[in-house]
Image (cartoon, rainbow, N blue to C red):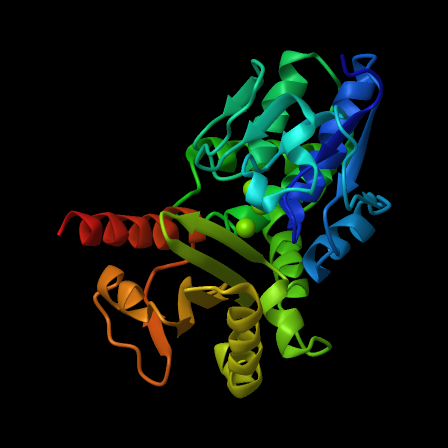
Length: 313
Ligand code: MG
Ligand code: MG
Ligand code: MG
């Protein structure tokens, strides 16, 4: 039987929601008398660092693998392919997530999954449920996650609940929601110090569907032209990942945070699946996807649907 401290973490290549949920869930557990600590499964991106600085949180410690039977709470993720090594043999006590479910456990698990725009919106409800005070600091970091995940409420993943929760949290934190929100998103768009490989690594997720090995990587931008000035370097980095990881389809999205469009660079031996899914022709490996900002609600389902159709034919 597993004993001891609960390790709380989100997904690899952590985003603001994964870090925020790890911090707020560990705090919630501590407040209700359980030993818990937050961790990160990778480097902190610039947007998340901005949020941590603003609300004066230290970044969680890095976790690179788990001992057998470690007590775990997974937040903002439930897919082992996006988790820490050793997760297969962990004792998963709880999952709080807002992604598709792709989890198999040996034991029963307390799983809270809701189709809201941000896992921190669920965290807010858990604080209320357990009657634990949301301090201005905690409110600020939760709010940052909602702004980030919903792209300031512009993403189709955003629900009324996310918006109402964000407004309440902004009041508790004592900040101007929109003024802070755009500063936060803008902080995440600076790629000047990153190499091509780092750019495609900031927010990269791997998926396996049937035979297809798919990677979808995304960055936010307030100036797509600036990003595409570095296209050759980005393409070279993608080709390198494809070679070393045997990826069939690599989709890199640069998402315009103001216009709420994305421009994609698509490479691999299965780019026809992308073209079919979005009824578009790639021109020098790129395509503009109008109104597309969400990997989980717009990109991934379209790819999976196309794959399923192909299999049926
Ligand atoms: Mg996330
Ligand atoms: Mg999230
Ligand atoms: Mg995200």
